[in-house]
Image (cartoon, rainbow, N blue to C red; front, side, top):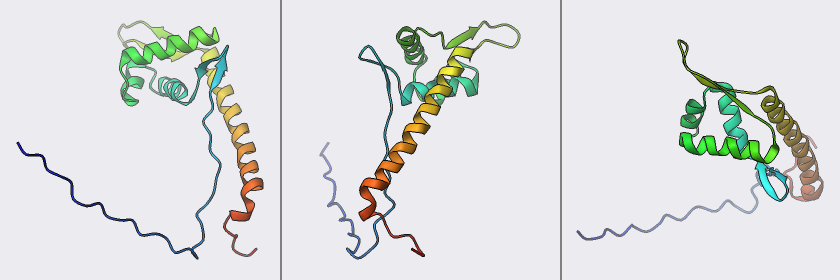
Length: 141
């Protein structure tokens, strides 16, 4: 079967140079590193959040398009690195099984969010301070 070559790419129109620049913001991704190894970061935090919402590791893994095995591996990794039991499985029965975050897991998730929020505030402030000459002018100023 012959290969079909893609057609020419459309060129993007460049914005006129006199157009005001878009909104500038500093962004970052935070990891908690223990003894040189990443213990907790955005992906693992999303997994913990999904478990907290779904009350199920299987449902959380599906939501994140991750295999159950990979999700379980991430949880074990968090627990090994931090020394904190973050999840508590519930055995099946009439209501079925599930997975809950432990109180320590909830506290770890809350601490990460508080830390992230505080660092983002500093990043936003530093970004404004260092890149102010290029920020678009606010209306009325």
